[in-house]
Image (cartoon, rainbow over all chains, first blue to last red; front, side, top):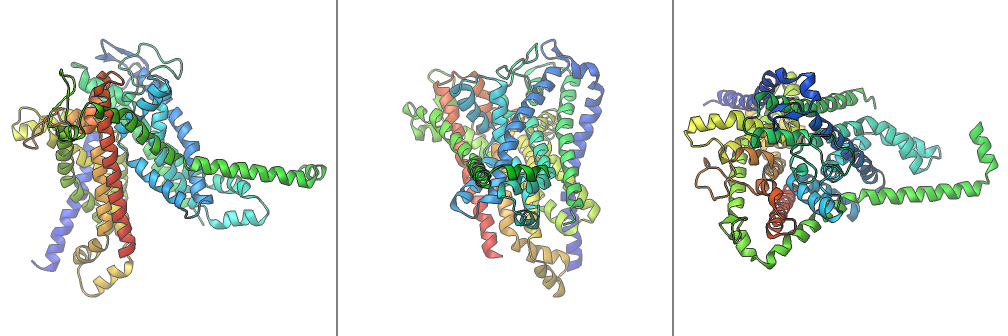
Amino acid sequence: MSAKSSERAAFLALRICGCAVAAPILLILGLLIVKGAPALSAEFLLSAPRMGLKEGGIFPAIVGTVILVALAISVALPLGVACAVYLNEYAGDSRLTRLIRLSIVNLAGVPSVVFGLFGLGLFVLFLKFGVSILSGSLTLAFLILPVVITASEEALSSVPKSFSEASLALGATKMQTILRVVLPNALPGMLTGAILGVSRAAGETAPILFTVAAFYLPRLPSSIFDQAMALPYHLYIVSTQVPGASETVKYGTALVLVSLAFGLNLVAIIARNRIRKQRKW
Amino acid sequence: MERNAAIVKKPVGVKRKTARYKEFAWEKSIAVLGSISIVILALIFLFLVKDGIPLFRHVGVAEFLFGDTWRPISEPPVFGILPLIAGSIVVTLAAAAMSVPMGVGCAIYIAEIADPRAKEFLKVVVELIAGIPSVVLGFIGVLTLAPFVQEIFDLPTGLTAFTGAVVLAFMAVPTIATISEDAIYSVPREYREASLAMGATRWQTIYKVIIPASSSGILAASLLGVGRVIGETMVVMMVCGNAPVIPNTIFQPVRTMTATIAAEMGETVHGGDHYMALFAVGLALFAISFAINAAASGAARRRGAGA
């Protein structure tokens, strides 16, 4: 085979690789939309499940997920930003810094079900928070911390050095420089990281299995020490544990969950690309 | 103007002093918060050890690691995690065999061949795949892929290690593709230009120059993809059929370590042997993820030295 024709064959194979990656996701999205869209009604979104989860809506699960995710990000974002500020502005290349970076990488690699065990051991049993929204959202917060730190660090390091040098030259202290110059300029990038974290937290099932998730709750949770239903767990339950659950309930739940996660992801991707393009420096 | 007035009123030394205290407090608290990830990682390890290790007062370590029977609720219970390890290994190897070529191929296509529009499109696709909740992929796998696999291979059930591996391979592609892509981009332009100038075709340049030059990055990417697959829980729990036995073929139901924890923790008595056994499985998983990360960063570091 000549060099040219083997090149043609190889490129064709690589193109097929690209298609093979793109095709399933398009099929999955198509399937979810075709089968799930008819389920989406105000009643489905705003009422509780009925008939042992076989019929009815998913309102409590939506509310549960929103609460869990909001609490998780409000813990993870300040921690993650502080960590990124330390790594980017204060720490040089010390042994501690290397240890911190190593632990972030490893934290990102810990399986999500192990986070669930950890949440059960620490929050539910040791600190006696019980199976509750508090335990679940703290577990999720720790899970998404590496995502938030990484994105925040990228945002911080994209702020030009000359900005903070100008501020320091004008007599501002380091704290003032960080709070008034560096952070405001890094804000859009950090928010992108926060959105990615939220999207990740919204879709995770394993960490909430033993820390917060409830099979079915007739009423909405009233405090952070209550259990809650959550969308991913609900999808798991109706698709595997409830024989005879209607197709509409299953596909509808899946579509709502995917739209939530995708919607957030898409917002983050678009925002990030826009920030990158806008940068003039 | 008002600010200046305030400064005049206060003695300068006092203001400077409080400013210095503030600065000091700020710096220290940032440093403390900066180390939070070390603390969390240590806490995870500590709690896995605290709730997992006491099991070995009743069960031998060798018996636990190499025992070929997992019957946690029979009387007396048997805690041998070999079937679970076997399940994890079978599923992971099969998934890696599919997703490494796909992911690396996709990365090469994006980095070297695709025109700008196809490139943008594929990059978005890859990020979207990374963003799908795993429980949704499990759901789709159960409803569409499992019946398909059952029919094609004429099996008693479609929920098998193979089915799970296909879904997991798909999930691991984003990790493998994005990191490989970075590795390919970091190959210096001169290498490429030199090869093309010598009369090599683009494909010859890719497989004789670019792939070897980025091989350690591609290795790191593949390892991280494997790490992702081993740690995945929901897909394997829903799609792999949940049978804790050592499989003879890939077309049998299996149960992985992660799925065992997720499926059984709900039924355990907190502090009982079964509970501790599941924490011990978690500890093993934690150790595996640590080892994979170490191997991946080792591979990535070699790139720094080699290129």
